[in-house]
Length: 403
Image (cartoon, rainbow, N blue to C red; front, side, top):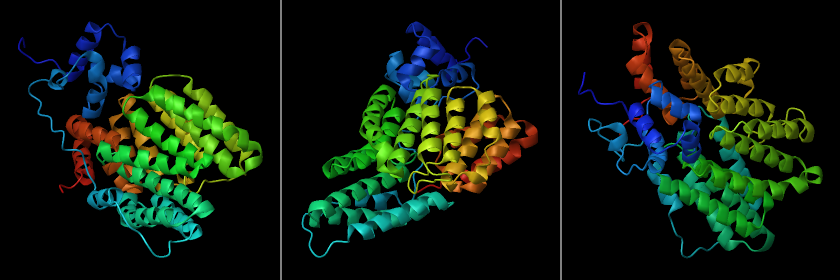
């Protein structure tokens, strides 16, 4: 029909060409993979609000209606949110002007932080369970930094940074962006005040994930390189926690590069693999990070998917037993990555099956994952008739309840 409106993908392609950009160039500027741009343009992937916000500045777009068309109504307030986010927000924005009494010891706080991370990695409903713990943990660590002095204060500051990292993990995918930035800033400030290289490096790791998510991948890579410079000299003599941190920094760098279509991601992935194999004990699993050989393999699948290579993703996943992944949350995310890989190949039945496995592993991982939500919504609309009813049921089960 002559008056048929162009699809969002067609609008993106037209504006990209008008701006004189290749798919690779636009992807690099926006912090997306070239495959994502390609699939949005050819209609194999929906244009999400998040992706639109990342590419709009580079296409000269100020009104997102120019991408979605006049028939699409956009709500900027409809981001899925967790019921306890108000409690966490209040804990993060509470200012205790005066504090008194005896603070909790660093050893006690370390045990509380480690227990909270253990809950995050072992619960199927990690956000709900951690949200019960977080407000008290933030209050106790903040109070300790105010009341302790000397080495106890430095230790408490490093643990306060960890509490903020857990808050960032909780807020990822459903917290408002300003609150996420607040946790990053508070965590980094505490780590720098502690003057603890491990705490600073881990704060950088968390900051890099947020920088990458908002299209500042180059800045994330610079910060990660600086953090590796803090850690690498200590690995030989510093014990497993230094090697664990170095491996995690390399994995974060690999994923950041993969999401901009940089094949150099495999070099950093291989560096992480060598650190885990050569500098960490056999069977090692990081308590808070879950760095381990299975996690390295999980990142290989993630990198392959973000590089738009489903064959490589499936090859990397072939020998990885999901049961070996030492985190329920990461196992659920792994199934989502496999679903993304199946989607790249147009395998709708496999995509639905893998999303179902992700949901049964960790319902909240799927409920608050933008990638899982986008896949489930598209399957509910476009899946073959034979599986459409099942796809609609899945979308209904993982829908975020109205608050």
